[in-house]
Amino acid sequence: MKRIVAGALAGLVVLGMAASPARAAGAGYVRLAHLSPDTPAVDVYLKSQSGAVDDQKFDGVAYGAMSNYLRLPTGSYSVAMRKAGAPASTRPVLTTQVTVGDGGAYTVAGVGRYADLGLRVFKDDLRLPGRDESKIRIIQASVRAPVLDVGGANGAAIADRVPFATTTGYREVNPGKWTVKVQPSGGGATSDLPCTLGAGNVYSLLVLDGKKGSLEPELHIDAARQGGVPQGGVATGAGGSRPRDPLPAALLLAALTAMITGGVFLALRRGRRTA
Image (cartoon, rainbow, N blue to C red):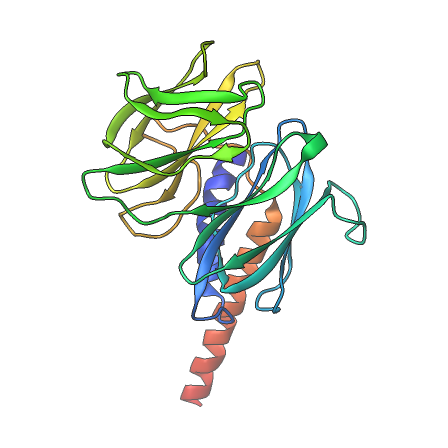
């Protein structure tokens, strides 16, 4: 049931933001992630510095969670993390600012070990590659493999010696069926991810620590040529990886509220025109 809700949530978040009559003409995209393996779940707060959108809170975000992209008006936003369940009045564990540019896309993530935890803003490049290419980058969130190599089973390299708590640039590769191999640099057990990279699509490969001591790669589709809309969710089907628990129901509530508000607004306008 959680996986079904995650899929519905993905569509409703984007649809809800697009339906809101209050959004500005210029907009960008932000997604949130918890990528610190030894940090407990947190509550994440997103606040517009200009009041362009209502403040949002996401409860109990755990390691490995990554939201879909939120469409937001251009401007400055603060992101704060507090221990899960802590009152909103308590001092945040971490805070950062993200400036959303028109058409820009950003991943705001809690990264590093708990002892030196930090919030980092990754600039995402959602420009679509050619129709006969795919584009992929690595987000390294595994503490068990402080440095890792990523490639294909056929020996094709995607990225070498990727340090913990970093992200690589995007690389163009051949589309089609892949078995992506993730391995600690210098040797060690590999983790394989059978997947299909769609032609003209943009992906992030998120590498996490698995529950049984292994590496756990997850493929996220950042943007797709078909539709051309930033996505951000786990790439499922056709050999993609499984989805994780979704970010909490606050996202769903915000999307539904925006949809209802937009519908009432349009109904009132039509009513005035026919009166």
